[in-house]
Image (cartoon, rainbow, N blue to C red; front, side, top):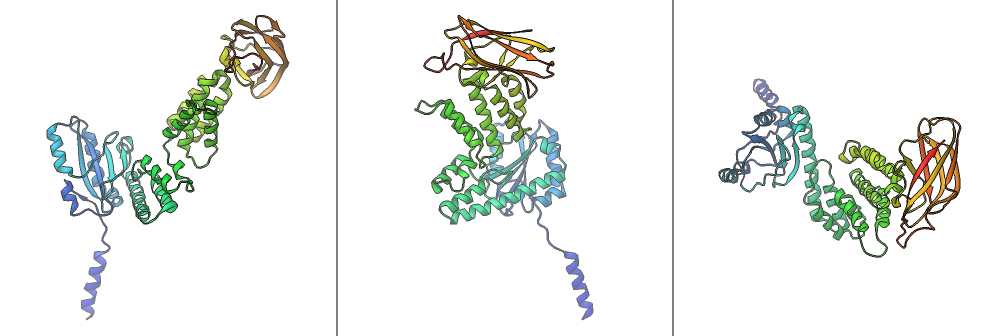
Length: 420
């Protein structure tokens, strides 16, 4: 009896656990008999116009790490021709059948689809071309796990109603790295209907950053009473303070707000534009909006120029200090005169103060009411500078409450001179 037991036990040990492994098929029809819960992993490469992409895809398909990560998914090759002829269209139709193969922004690409053919993730371009198979395997594994979580949430949502269903749909659409189960616009519409009071917050969380910024733009351009660019900026600021919005959404809000301020306030918005540009960069320095923030701050974050003088954009609006850029001649200790000289326009410019800073430290200031128009009154401001500033910044505060038209605009132009 012992002689029989030993070979039996040995056979069981040698056999070990069965590990699921992908199967390479050449058509949609062939996939149907072996298709399981891990769906499809399609390897798309340039056919006859970039041989390296085909080599990369085939190496990845043969990688043991990638095979293990893909579970029981079906592998398929997707050759992408440079020109899709009618003959190739027929070939693809026969090969892929009911399977809708999505395009990729770049090749080689790995396209991941559920067993029902829904496209849920793409890896492409440099992230595939230059990556180690182990890293690709980890990404495939994480995306596939997210897909299964998404499918589970959608199955639960099918049995739920009202706010609970809205929450499940929102969670399924928010999983990182993978596509939402359908167009976000459709998902948001469903959630709004199921959750009219927005208890879940997903109607706002899921909105595309571009659509969110267009909502603010719509307020800016509205002709309805009480709306306009000031209301748009106020709404954007309220959204920026709301923790429900993502960094991507907030970057878009900062960008549209900067554009509105530049259009309507010009040089007067310089300080706030600088503040918003820095905040936009801090959210994600590597995004395209984060990278553009330095240029925004450099080109739009300055007030008005000493050489150009003041314009209606500069003097119109609130009376906050505006920075004067340009070659500031504060190169030695002494007493400096800042003189405002009107050149044209229907209104004079009213000045309230001139302040000189070294970096962020105030070092000289003259506060008095002055006017520069066809006639000038107290239009010279005196600054006693004890030591030459290393980082000079000159701020001027205009106040046009006395001189403006019915639209709140002041028509005034002039030059500024600084002498010692």
